[in-house]
Image (tube, rainbow, N blue to C red; front, top):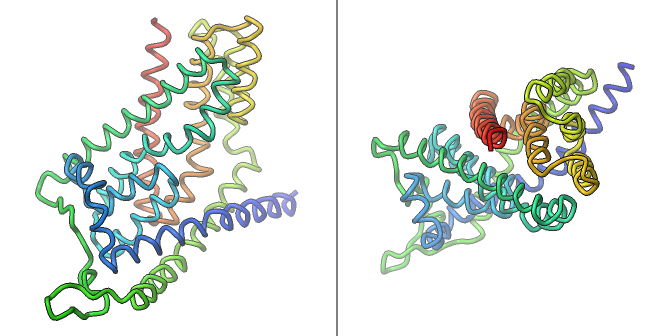
Length: 330
């Protein structure tokens, strides 16, 4: 049994690390290269409004925008800024929260529109997608408020650049303008990426391995036990507990089951929405431990990474619980 668990955990850690590390490496390299060559300033028209409203730096604003396409790449952009002391730990936490809504947008046309809405039906599916989007939007708003509160003492600098980043090769033309050296910038960016990956990869692999072992030992199984009593106390149909329990194991399966029961008239739209949101609440701790924690810890270190996950999870839990309460009374 020990050998089987070890093998499964090693396979999971290896697969996930191999899948995520290239994205992280690309994100760090591109960010570093953009900063070293001054390209970051050319995106000012896109990032300045967000940076100004949230009181965050340009690199953090660019991270938020990047999360529309890839959350991992967006978070990776914060690593170099944190290493170069261009951004603070508080700004990292606030930025990850602000990125919640852009991250949902990245799944809109790959999951919600082609999968969720057809399975749940146009009405129920659209309502569910809107609720999920609104939850993420509210979380982003909380991130903006936190950023404005934390950065109110004048730490905001939209054009923050690491020392010497405007002149990566240390040369200027006769008119004083920067003379970019792409080869020098590429080498500097590659060196920076390599140094960060030396720290990130082992941390990610070890964390993923330990989390996988915990799952193989059914450490998080107790979260599913609370579903039945909760639905009975709330006076919901037994199907709600079934959908929630399935969603805990696999979100796709939960949505498919909900769509099937809904089409048969065995459950109402309201109950489907509550069931899926309950599934999010019940699985929040397990999902954070299995996916979010390894990624955040490997990128930002154990202390900041765990703090970032805890604050984001707490905000998501509170907003989900609020929406469940609203659905129960309407």
